[in-house]
Image (cartoon, helix red, strand yellow):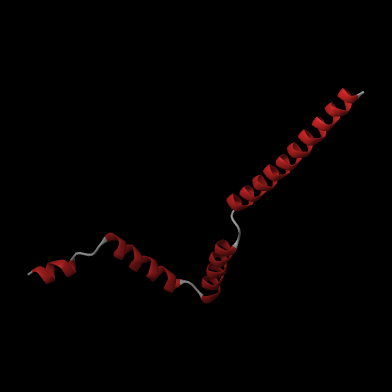
Length: 84
């Protein structure tokens, strides 16, 4: 009794996968190839989040370098004024 009842009840996920599989069989080869290529391009393309992180990192680095040189030059100028 347990085996028969358990096998007759399918999970909604399995039913959904079966339905999607049936839909894929109806598609032609060029459509399937285009879908696969689109999915591969999406996986291999760098995300907008990665690009923004790189740009922010570069800007922070440049800001740090600018602040370092600004502080060094401003202290040297102050010392020159005191010597006169």
